[in-house]
Length: 351
Image (cartoon, rainbow, N blue to C red; front, side, top):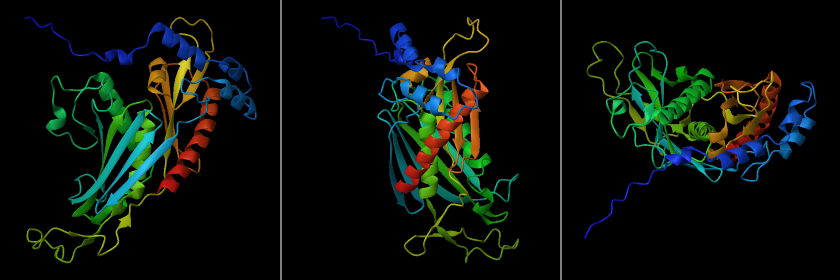
C-alpha cells in the first residue's frame, strides 16, 4: 500500500495579494483623495475631515479611525506585564524586569535600558522561528544561523520596531537614565523590556510602542538595602556583598523616572500612480491611519509619528517609497495628534 506524499502547507502567499484584491484595496483607499489634495494648505481642516470620512476601509472604519484598543495590566515584585489588543488581529505582550549590574565603562553615570522584540510563528505562519532581537550586546544565541533563522522581512520589521522604540524612549527623553544610578561607578539599574508579538494583524509598531510605554509606567522599582555594601573603599571592593532588594510588602516600591509618555501612530501610504511609470509632477497619495495587514501589502511607504499629549513630536519616521507633500504631512500630523491624545487618555484610564 503506497501512501502519497503530503507537502507542508506554504503560507507565504499571505504576504501577497491577488490582482483583484489589490485593485479593490487601492480603489477603496484612493476614494475622494484627489479632492483632498486639491484643497489649499491653509484650509481650516473641515474639507480634510469630510474627504477622509468618504475613504472606505475593509473593516468598516473611516479614513481617520483607529481600531479599538484594549489593555490588560499586571504587576508583581520586580516585574510587570501588559497585553495590548489592537483591533481584532494584532496582539502584543510586554514584560519588564530589572536587576542591579555594574555600569558600562563608557557610561558610568547612566543606567541601562534593554529592549527585545520576539516575532515568531506564533504571531503568524509567515514568520520563521528565530531568536529575539535585542538592543543589548549580541549573545551567542542571537547569532544563530540556519533553517530557523528569520528572513529579511522579519529582521527588518524587528529592527525597525527596536529602532523606533529606542528613539522614542531614550533619545526622545521619556526616561531619565541618570536617575537609574544606584551608586556612581558601582551599581546601576538595568531595565529589560521584552516585547512578544502574539498576533500580527497589521500595525505592529504602534502596538509595541503602546505596550512598552504602558509597562514602563505600570512597573514599580523595588527599594534597595545597601547597609552591607561596605563604605565603598578599595579594601571593601572584594568583600562587599551584593545590594539586597526589599520586597514591596516591606517597603513600597517606586515608579520609574518617566518625564512624559510618547505614543506613536503609523500611516500606510498608497500612491495613485506608480512612481516609475507616473508622468505627473505631483502624485496623489492616500494616507491610511492604523493600516491592517492586508493594507500593508498594498502600501508603497509608511509614515510613523510619535508625540506626547502636549503635541511634542518625539519621532518622525518616513522611509520613503512614494512622494509625500508638505500639505499631506501636515494633514497626517493633525490626524496623529488627535489619535495620540485619545491613546494617552486610554492609557491613563487603564493605569
